[in-house]
Length: 96
Image (cartoon, rainbow, N blue to C red; front, side, top):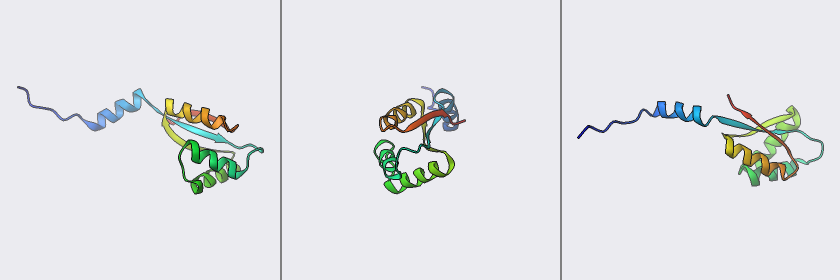
C-alpha cells in the first residue's frame, strides 16, 4: 500500500483563489439613508456589530463608498441583493 501524502495547503489555497476569487461588496453613499438605517441594514445583512455598522456608514459618508465585506462571488451577490432590498446602493467587484 502506498504511503499517504499530505496535501500542500498553500497550493490548495492558490487553487481555491483561482477557482473562487474573492469579491468586494461596496456600499455607496446616498443622501437618502440615515447612519442608523445603514448601520442596522449592515448588522442584519452582513452580521457586523452596530458599532462597526456606524463606522462603515461614516466611511461611506466621508469617502463616498466603503468595502463592507470581502467574500466569494455568490455570497457577495447575496449581500448585494439583500442590501438593495433596504434601498441601499451596492456593487460588487473583484478583490484582486
